[in-house]
Structures are given as structure tokens and as C-alpha cells.
Figure (spheres, helix red, strand yellow):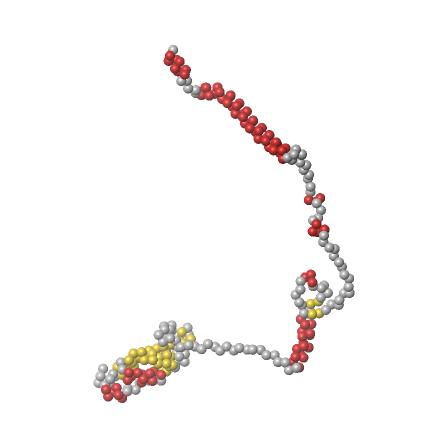
Length: 249
């Protein structure tokens, strides 16, 4: 008996016990849902009724008015009526067109043609010419840019270098012969578009005695012009001169 009483006190509900109380819980849940819905709907209608009543208990009267019943606004009703003034119609005139606003342009205005404007300007031009008027116009003639000489130390692109067509040998200085001085001189020559030497500069020399005679020989020589893109150009070239005496290498 003691064991039976202990089992009844520690009884655990299972599926059958829950199934027995399911219907009761379902009915309670549905009743609570209906009550909450009725409470919300009633609150909405109660708020609507209270909004139609003033604080002193007087009901609020609402009227439905269409925009068409209001009529035109006061700004349109107060517009002054237009005044029409009758007058003689002016004869059509011919003149130079002048831009004016559309509302100010007279309907009788006629735009002159090119022939009519030329006829009106011709007498005035004839009077000016008869009175000795002169028509002058400034004409500016731009001179073509002058070709600048290329820099002696700059690289110049060239397809064909100048070729010497007349070789002039420098004279051996007498003082250098007596002193037995020999050596080499390198002269840099600017050959223009016509193949003529324009400038000559000594860039390396074994003796100053040979400098001037080498420059003179280079300036008396003749060349074919250098070519670039089938056009003659000015270019610098180097001419070597060697001064030797008989019996010396």
C-alpha cells in the first residue's frame, strides 16, 4: 500500500492525460481571442465617437464641400477688364528688322527684303563716295618664319648626309713647316639647304697654327644638301684635315 501511494503522488502525465485536457484549453484560447478582438474594435469606435464631440459635449457637424462649389479665387475676380482703343490703321512700312517682344510687334509691320534694303543703302553710300569718303581696310601680311640653324651639339635626324662635290685643301702654314709641326684638325661645318657651308668651328686640333687655314678650306668647299623625308635640310658635319711633311708619317 505504501508503494502504491508513492506512485500516485509521483504520477507523470503522458499523451493520454494531455489529450483529455486539450478540448478545455482550446475553448479557453478561442474565448480569449474573441474577447481581445471585440476589445480592439470597441476601442476604435469609441475613439471615433469621442472625436465627434467637443469638450463641452456639443456634437461636431461635418460637411462635404466640392471644389467646384467654391468658385474662382479672389485674385481672378479682381482683375481689371481690358480696355480697347480704336484708332486709324497705319500704312505698312518698310524698314530694317529690329528684335522686339512678340506682344509689342505690330501686325502691320513688314520686313524689308534684301533688294529693298540695298536700294535704301545705295543712295547713302553714293553720297559718302561723292563727298570724298574713302573705304580703308587694314591688311596685315605675316612674314613666314625664318629657318633657325640647328644646334651644333643637338642630334638631327637625317636620311642622307651631305656629300662633298668640291674639296679644297688647306694651305700648310709656313711657320709650321719650318718648325716641323704636324697634326690633325677636326672642323664642324654647318651645311645649309643649298649645300653651302654657313659656319665652321674647330672642335679638335693638335696645333692652333692649323685652325684658321682649316676653317678657310671648309668654307670654300661645296656639298650636296642633306635630305630628310625627301626634303633638303641644314645639318652639321665634321671634316678632318691632316697636316704632314714629306718624310714623316
